[in-house]
Image (tube, rainbow, N blue to C red; front, side, top):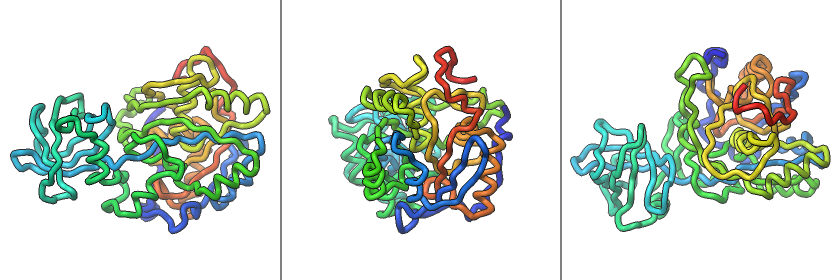
Length: 364
């Protein structure tokens, strides 16, 4: 398939620049993948879409304040976006500056963009493709530095600096495992009260950990989508979650992934046997139309960028034309898009092929 097959026009004013006053105040576009029928709801009405034997699977990653500013010892200003913590005192990061720093050089960090250098420094240890290895002096935990002077890594389409509100709102209420540099945004709509209401109905919850990397915003640059090099992200799926999925299957319930990161987690863990098995390591699974889903029956997700790998994933779940028609309706109804925007609840379409098939590889 072509990248251009997943293009749509979005009026810029529909890109949400701030969260709503109420975390669960977003709209919810419900899409029946079998019929293509749409219904307009408010997010708390997700409860009405759930059944007692369902299982909701959440990604419990926690966003780190991964954006830093500073300067080279020669004075050149730069911006750092941590991609991945690789140790207590080490990380791989993107560095934006006029001339790339060399291994062995130091970076003098500041508390804000264009600010004067403060007490913290980093050493550039290596160049790894487009990334740079960074290390703190004398083994100082990098997470401590990030907590003091780091900024929340808002996506590039949010055209404003981060502020105090983002510290809480660009984080799910159940975030636990530090390591993401982008939020699993479908989970941003859930409140403690809504989770309590889900529990009260006997609907079960389980968790995976996928540390969302900056590569999630990487555009598809190849016209043939199969040629796109998918970025890798760290993933853990434990035995308890696998057992919860198996029990849901025995009860005849649905496995509902909260966010595309939970979809990718469960599908990665299901590659070997057709059902989730404990998994720990990187995943670069790329899901696009033709993929046969093994683990997921429905999903909660936000709206995704034109021509993005995530739009391709949800299109694989219900069909490209069905998904693009739903997006056209959302635009016509002035839904809010992307990280701080509105959400969808999607049930699998016939294209998803939701029966396990151990013989199938990652892609169709």
